[in-house]
Amino acid sequence: MSDLIETAPRMELSVQDIEHLVEELRVYHAIYSPLFQRREQREAAHTSLQGLLAPLPRKSIEPMVLAVDGVAPTAVRAMQSFISEGRWNDERLVHQHWKEVERDLGADDGVLMVDGSDVPKQGVHSVGVKRQYCGELGKRANCQAGVFVGYGTSQGYTLLDRRLYMPAEWLTDDAYAERRRQCALPPDLTFKTKPELAQEMIAAIVQSQALRCRWVVADEAFGGNPAFLDEVAGLGLWYFTEVAHTTRVWETRPATHLPPWRGRGRRPQRERLVAGAPAAQTVLEVATALPAAAWTRRTIKEGSQGPMMAEFAALRVVAVRDALPGPDVWLVLRRHVETQELKTYLCNAPADTPVETHVRMSGMRWPIETCFEDGKQLLGMGAYEVRSWSGWHHHMTLVILAHFFVVRMSLRLKKKPQQ
Image 1 (cartoon, one colour):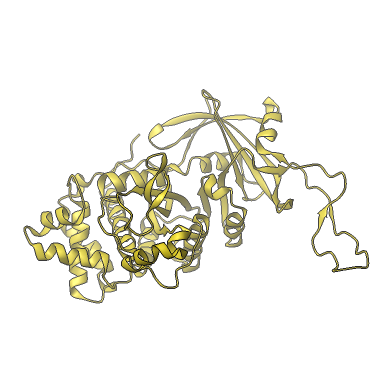
Image 2 (spheres, rainbow, N blue to C red):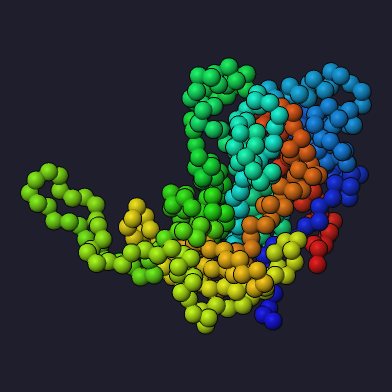
């Protein structure tokens, strides 16, 4: 059996373990407290964090406030206002959070993990809600769709940033005008695809220089978007993203030429493939044609699944851009030994990248999925009852801070990852 390749340590997070760390939470809150303009906001943020970290069966605003402050109807209304309408800049908290993550988890080979997380909703009045694919349910349903960026290293993992995906009709259709007003959408908000939202967050992290990072990993919803991949590469990062089996590549770079000008009209500006150039192949066709000797068996430790054996192959190919040859990249293939399930990835890491690195990166998406599981099961990530644009982002910001508090305490209390 090959040596076990570690991805990231499995963190067994439990809010019960930190329920009595009152002083530690006060110190943690003090990091962010100066970023609120008013005393009432600082107190509400502390109460919210206490509620999200409390062992409650449901973590909507009312039960959290009652658990922390007791029977105080005015406190419930104040908290609802703080989350839904409060004029506090949660982007400042997020940027400070990145600095804290760097202190506890930062590494030169830090991995930015991109993924979506959706929350089923009843009714049609919550911001951005629409019948669309809901990952939590695995089918189309009425839901809100979020895009998140997480961070993982050999020390652990957490969430970094969040954006709410807004369907185009929410921003342009007159039928949504009243809902836009009720949800207090920013007047300058424009439609952005999920890969565009992810790229926006990644760019902000890189440009802040607050957190070391080297890699970006994502599923094919993002890896299948060439513009996203090129933007990530333009930031100086290496992407390792899953792509569909129908994705096309060339095994060798085909010849191109600029067609001669025929004396009429505009001179040709765009190169074309020369006559007789080979057609690009699908990555599935490339994988199927590989000889047995091209595959190597590796054992990878991936999250709660524990050790998993798979066969890997990696070869240099040429990506397709607008039907023409694009950048030289890695095509990485991962085939499960037992089920024969094939996963295909594109990666722009240097040509001398060892196969062990590709193996590790193929298993670096599970930490963000675990963040979502912990966030929804332990920290009330999907239990909010706010409808506004700012309310969604405020809530997710506080959940991100609560999650990292648990991660930080797990590290500082030397809580061991699951073996």
